[in-house]
Image (tube, rainbow, N blue to C red):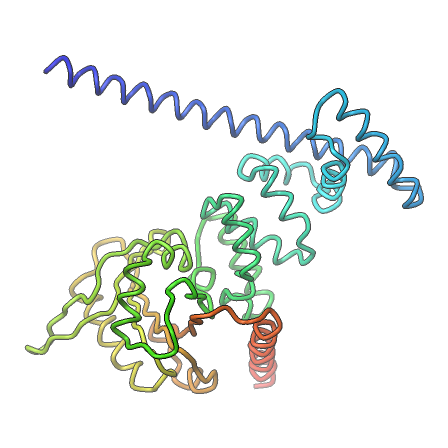
Amino acid sequence: MNKGIQHNQLLVSIKELIEQSRQQIAISVNASMSMLYWQIGEQIKIEVLQNSKAEYGKQIVQTLSAQLMQEYGSGFSKRNIFNMIRFAEIFPDEQIIRVLSKELSWSHLCLIIYIDDPLKREFYSQMCKMEHWSFRTFKERIQSMLYERTAISKKPEQTIIKDLESLKKEQKLSPDLVFRDPYFLDFLGLKDTYSEKDFETSIIVELQKFIIELGSDFAFMSRQKRITIDNRDYYIDLLFYHRRLKCLVVIDLKIGEFEASYKGQMELYLRFLERYEMVEGENNPIGLILCAGKNEEHVELMQLDKSNIRVAEYLTALPTQKLLQEKLHLAVKIAQQKLIHKCNE
């Protein structure tokens, strides 16, 4: 073997060892720091704040902060000490902290502890660990109301809990945790009038941002994939693969509202992929029809879920927080009514 090539291989191998070691050290340091912060918060909570008035507690924290910062630096600012106390209040179980601190940084945890809804907090904790979000990405996910936009927010609470338990214990991801509604595609820069071709081209140009909006486990496979059935050619707009669901994902792009005919078209694509494209160990493909709008009852009556098809709206401009909340509350109300109807049957 050429000595130069051998030297380069050795260098690459050593660099990999160094990077692995650095990552392990960073994880260990982060876990130790988060554990320390929890212990400090727990001690202050028990010994100082439990039986004291709010104003006295604030004074104690301020004094402690000033003394600790003088000796140990800015990590013990008044704000961060209150974060430590909140950390201990939200997570009273030390064993949970030991697990979380190995997988999430202190910055991530500081976002999680101020989410009041326990189910929402659990959702973000699990998704952040699974998708390895940076602090910036995590913050953007919360601000874009990912929890509310994910399909689980429309399901009965016990089903949500069951899905999260499967993810936590078995690392088994359900499609309901993957697909959301609506999708925010404001980054495509589409104006009032555009064609399906413009829509598709804009996605390809901004493919990285599109995949970030879909979720980190999506891998792009093909655009306008041609399939031939009975000597007729059909074209799949976008074909992805989802690593954790272990299945192909067909995305059909529509610039108008959902129509009944879209179901047959998507079923044809999915059945073809099942027969000719699936490989051993894969699950059946899933279809996602992205529309500018949809009627919930229309979609429900067609029982698309039985055909492994999902329909979601996309928004080319971000709506106001108020409008989005109204749409989501309506979706939850519809889900609750369905549940009541089923219980009365």
